[in-house]
Image (cartoon, rainbow, N blue to C red; front, side, top):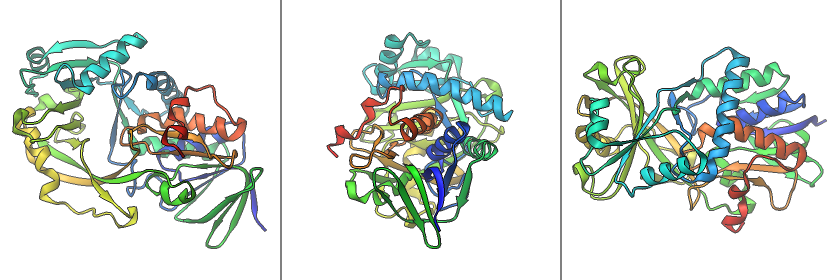
Length: 386
């Protein structure tokens, strides 16, 4: 006989952990599935840290969601008695008309956010570990910082269980179906029934939602930790997180535009840096190459030599993350076009984790009420013509 729940969440990584927490917090009978273990390293929500910021250069429409996300992270910290967010600020650097600089200024202007505009020389004087190209502008956002990614996932899951959620790990889902009034989810050995289903399957979203033929592309994205030669890069030296938008041929980094991001050193020995642009398309997330290759690190090493000269350009360690990107690099947050009791969250395009608190809440709204007061309309499936 099938086990019965109010809501089932398929995939409890970053976004699914947020969804299962907010559903359980409302007193619902919630079941969460994942094909891997809790806070695993096979998808998109691992690698120690993620930047969180308010002056969102990707689009001003994200800002109201971010303001609520900050509140919900603070609530989760209070409930769990764990620090998840470190406010160390964010340094953006790029040409005045670059997406990062112009977009952050636009969002800050439209939403009354605090940012500080700096020249390249002023940024270098304030943070002597950086070398900022002369033609660049810099924007510092003091309210930004970073989240501890695995701790956030575990805390969402632990608090969900404390509120009564059931979690099943290392149990892949074989199929799901919906009548519009109930859903059925099957594994190799069991069947479960619920009133609604939330699908937050990460890089497996396209296969789980094969009927929709979603235009999603999965990218292999290596991340690296490099040794530092100066305490100026340490968190306790007021080193911020950073994002550099490098145009072609500036600093001899590349002949095509590149973007790079990184974090202060948390242990005084290594700091994490990665390339946000680019990425190798992969057909099967289960078969991604997780080995180190010289070609992976070459553009980052060039960037470090140009802009962070006190960081050794040979990595001390690495990991491989996955981006699941939409054509416009904006998220998908919506209900299934055929089944109103199936909620979809996918295509977070390498900039989603900071939203897992607030969109977890939105998924809970959509699964229980069919609507949400959170401003997610601009993330609907309609724009992708699905």
